[in-house]
Image (cartoon, rainbow, N blue to C red; front, side, top):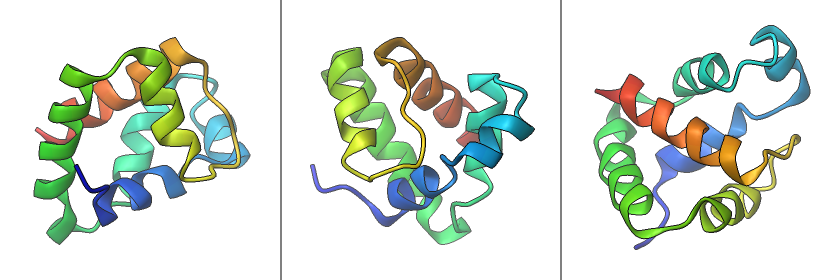
Length: 91
């Protein structure tokens, strides 16, 4: 599946200041990063996240995020938690 623009926007929020503002909470980081996603890109992102979370291991999810070259690195478990929480926020 092609990576949608919304995923790039979501990952653009993964920087040190965002992690600091989220007080180290991956769940809060996900909520904050969803704000970077344009309204018109949210449906495609939702579909992409559902598909990826069903088909990929936590390690593969981490790799998908890392290919977007975020400023911060998440562990495999945190990558999965981040994407699950982002999907939950998208509804």
